[in-house]
Length: 226
Ligand SMILES: Cc1cc2nc3c(=O)[nH]c(=O)nc-3n(C[C@H](O)[C@H](O)[C@H](O)COP(=O)(O)OP(=O)(O)OC[C@H]3O[C@@H](n4cnc5c(N)ncnc54)[C@H](O)[C@@H]3O)c2cc1C
Image (cartoon, rainbow, N blue to C red; front, side, top):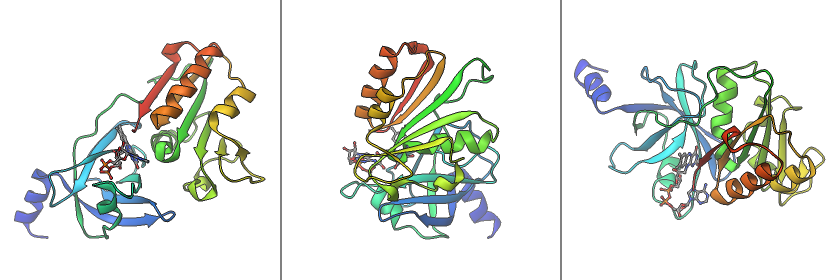
């Protein structure tokens, strides 16, 4: 690449796609050049095709110390941007804006607190980044999914810490039911710091359950996708 196009790439915040990992029919990981962009695990970036003024928010999936950037995207079939992202190929460029957001772990994790992550679908992305950035984290991760095809790269998580809750498929290695049912059957203690990420109806219902179980609202953090 010559100097002119290199300079252009930096000023327009274009990042080259290094890899596309298709995890099932609709969901994929886009691996991008990092270009020295730093972020705090849990933040999101606005991403869009290079030839478009439109972008959408995506939580960063990779870890703070990785030398690349990744996002985990589910195609919304009648959506505007996600189907375009799904068709991208390595070598293409994407627009990436500065990381933003406050959905982050506390600077110092209180040893008296437990950490519970609750995701629906691709809402697992910031938790993947939390864990990749802090490999010794003591956490439990509840993942609300429809079936096994949505256990995105689950081998990354320690089996004892990752609890998939499948709503449409009974398996031996999953809890059969929604995360809300799991929480009603397995109440959490009030000293649990809870991070919720995904669709608004899950977050709303889980928030109510946690508050009823005595978790103070300042211990509940939420990131709503849609
Ligand atoms: C802070 C934040 C972080 C996000 N992080 C991620 C992420 O890591 N991965 C990811 O896949 N998405 C994420 N999203 C959602 C993403 O920004 C887009 O809304 C999504 O990709 C659809 O964009 P689109 O242009 O294809 O659809 P649009 O044309 O913008 O919208 C189509 C409709 O789809 C709805 N919708 C959005 N997402 C979904 C979904 N997953 N399932 C069903 N309906 C949906 C929208 O509410 C809208 O009604 C995040 C959103 C926010 C606000």
